[in-house]
Image 1 (cartoon, rainbow, N blue to C red):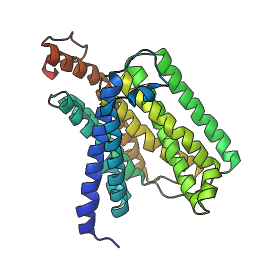
Image 2 (image 1 turned 90 degrees about the horizontal axis):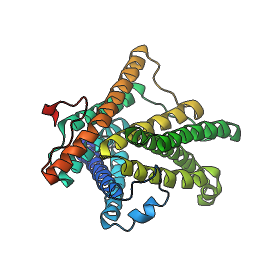
Image 3 (image 1 turned 135 degrees about the horizontal axis):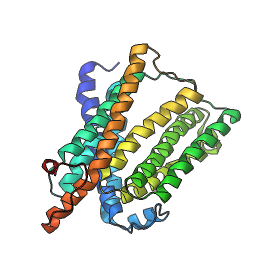
Image 4 (image 1 turned 90 degrees about the vertical axis):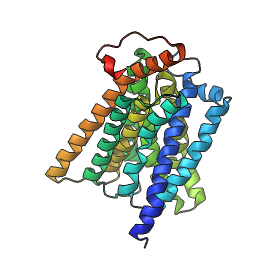
Length: 312
């Protein structure tokens, strides 16, 4: 059994380093995706174009390092400790986005990211999801797939019809749904692996994972392309991903959340904090983008309604 000193010496630094890697990945990918042609809500060939950009390819290496560090953190520390540390990647994304533009991180954006991180961490602590079963029957899969497809289609429809901030949030929401579903499928595929590699590779969870994973990645890049900063899209993805996973586990895999009245109130409050953080980031991002353009050109952009001069 691993003792507390080992957890502090290995799991915590590994989780923080993984969060920093994921934050840098988001900042690099958003910067590169934003530099591509921004016409249209979703460009299905976007990844092919991005693959010709060295900085974007470098972001994949950084992301791979983050995955290794995340695995180290998970294998040496409790999930309740590691997960809240991993979501600080959102804060790192804000910091690295400013660093890439040679500007100080925006304080309002950091505040919004902090609300998202604290809200998600609090929700996980209050919810305390318990393990469930590892199999789904066909009768359970069909309504689940139908419901998730409807949600995904609604997000994409919103993205196509409404440009601007709503498009960013819709694409990010669709990304979070795909990632959350992929996490659930990975859990089922891991159970198939106990029966052998062949059983895993030929069963439906792994085959669907090959669809949901790449689709989520493509939508992720399109969400970054549509946004003026990485934080608004990343905040929605970071929040929707685990919430969808928890929803699938609770409704279909027999997992459960804490039903203690005090902790239920805490969960609702945490969701409110997360929503507030997303709202702050979504409203602040356009002003941050204008300030960055102004720093390059030496000109002030037009004022933004609801943003004080002191916040610029």
